[in-house]
Length: 417
Image 1 (cartoon, rainbow, N blue to C red):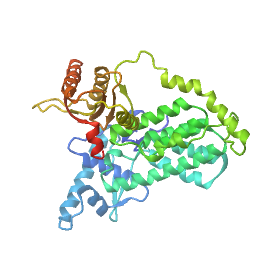
Image 2: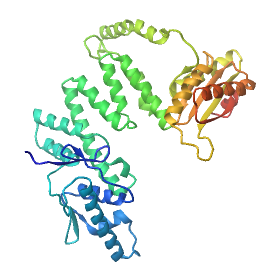
Image 3: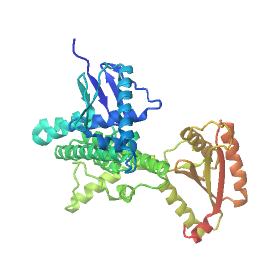
Image 4: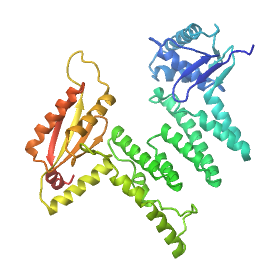
């Protein structure tokens, strides 16, 4: 029978498996012992000095009693040993201290995702050809997220997380170059999709969009664009980078030979044919909605464009237009259970859509806010509109508390907003 291995995953979270069984550590009142284990595992090759270990676990303080700090660390090591044994691992010392250096010593074989990832990247740098690509692909797949994300507020873990992130980005760039050279669009899309899932705010979606456009996947590119706009508005309360917003404007259509060919007039005509060949799809996308009901929901950048269009229309044909700022809050009641914010925001989004008229528009801004554009609406009616939304929200099991602020678009424009 093969010897059981202790597998440890630290990318995207912390998990341990002894053979097929999960090792569950009792963290109650002892989160420091888990951090001790993680530091030792990340220092597996060279160990870590006892002084550095104490400073990272208890904070550096020149006035602190070193004898007490040493005692605390010894107690922590003893507690960790007990946790590992109660979690299903064989009883052993596990932590060894030699000449002021601390090492993790396991009586069973270890398999760390961080170690395998680092080795695969290192081996790929030493060779070329197909084997290099295989190693890079293997390393790329092993990186399932940032190193121990729950510990990133700790600078010791933050620096090591950055180290592994740099190695991961190296694999993405190297694989991208290979896929571009071989015109491998499928693997490029998968590569960018994984990077965007792990680091959603680092513009990998731009590469996703461009790759989709290169193979005429316009609908997929538009979906990625809109989802990214929504993500930025929801999580950051702001639009994505200028590069993302200008992505569609800068991408050229391609001719049927899958090449940009604008060196002569014939090439221009070929591109024009491609554009005209898309006209029915474009018309269907714009006007193909059936059974349109309620207000129009759009991403924040699209909402900004719509509001600017309304402001321009007002200059030709005077009418009232109101911006309503709607916020979802936790009810201020003692013992009130914390609301499911994402679920309640989705409920509120649907409620707003059905409570407003077909000519109104709205968008989400941040994790608790919506902005509504109420065209041809008298500001005196805003209270009634809010009450209609609030009633519908409560009727549909709304658990939060709503409040609003409304302002005329003319007032906002004069204020330079």
